[in-house]
Length: 301
Ligand SMILES: O=c1[nH]c(=O)c2[nH]c(=O)[nH]c2[nH]1
Image (tube, rainbow, N blue to C red; front, side):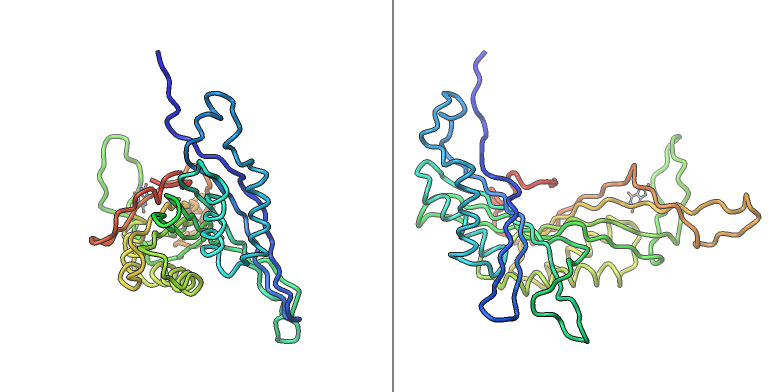
């Protein structure tokens, strides 16, 4: 029996890079979790134990810090592209790179109605993400950007039903025309190109996801995800495709009749396991091919 190395990439994962801009008294913070990986002809390292073409993961880590200073951070996407390009330049055997960045948001602490210059409060809720995949070297290089968010925890206390579903002899679920709908959303959208205002587009897409969740009636989480995706694609020509992974965070009404009490959608138990897991992708019908944009992107279809 023969064996071949069929896929490999290597790099430094979850490098915590914090960049402060302090050129004036009103500081700015970019709090990032950066994972880099090189792809290319690195078979010798795996098959022969030969490191001559291997730029150490330690060097990749250092590059992430150097670029936070030298290139700077104006958005996770722009920074990730710069780091990826540098890593490919520094590594003759590399044919590509993947740079994943998560951003943890901080708000200014409010003091007497104004945001403080240099004291911050970590914002709960969603983490902004990007996965930049560069393939090829120099002029032929393709840059693919998949941005998104995770841990966007949403709940609506009415405006959601689930009924009319298929039944078999194992079905016990009751139909409901008024339930809690809750999820912890992961969304990732693939940009058609790189001429994008990364920060304002992120803000607009996350606001659109929230608005659609809030304002549309849900016959199932499946329908809600599709509507969220369709609304984003309609408003954002620069987005080719959006993918969702959404746990259905079940809230079951508690039987209070046992205590002589009525429960009309007032008391629930929130369960964390098991959960329905609904995943969907919504794509523009004229979207450019994804190529390797989704290769090794965690938690996706
Ligand atoms: O929105 C839902 N989709 C389902 O597919 C499903 N299945 C289930 O038991 N509850 C729900 N809810």
